[in-house]
Image (cartoon, rainbow, N blue to C red; front, top):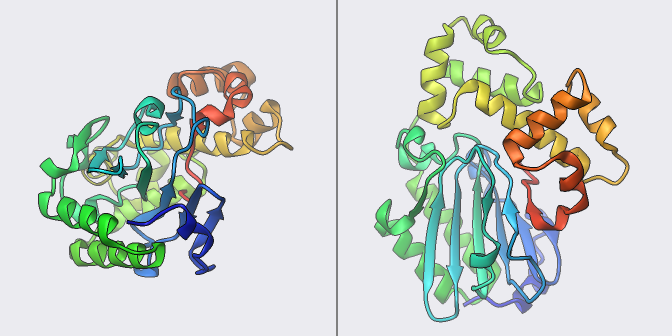
Length: 278
């Protein structure tokens, strides 16, 4: 099984997003980048994360492989539209491997309507037992990180289905991302020449959430990224994300994240937010 010392001997710089003593964020194989945002390998230590450590909602599926040294578990988090507290459970494990999918990315490997997974947490063994078994075997048998992520890449490439997303979804999705979630459903419908109802159906199929919900998540995640940078104040964050006044920004932030922007900024170490999506 891979160990913490393997982080320091991993030198594939083109893959590394962030590298520290206890964790590393890695890019997937280039052929997977449209569907997988990044891999994270973490070796939790005492004090590394609080029991209140919470994942902020970003509307994408996440797969988590966890090892306590004796047994390996695999959990699928569907597209989330609300925060999920994971700290107390994560602190029970010696190793965590996380697959962060792009928005609508997991659909390409499962073919499942993503609305069936929204705001749900499943044992991956009940979703895809064969893939669950192989992922656990690779984690337990790989001698180093390079070998492990190479096997994981191969596994996902083998499970990538020949699914073509409808072009109107791809265009609408990109418009939402490029606009930072500030494009209305009506504008999207006009730009892709399909009805709002039709677009809504395919967003729930591929992505698992409505167009409006996804746009809100994209917008608030942009605000979160700004708030994590010391040079940005809360005022600058709300102006950069197009809110017309501070009360509206605070209300929207709290409705999605469960806390105010100020409380988030004061306790950032208690929250995980995406670094490579959008």
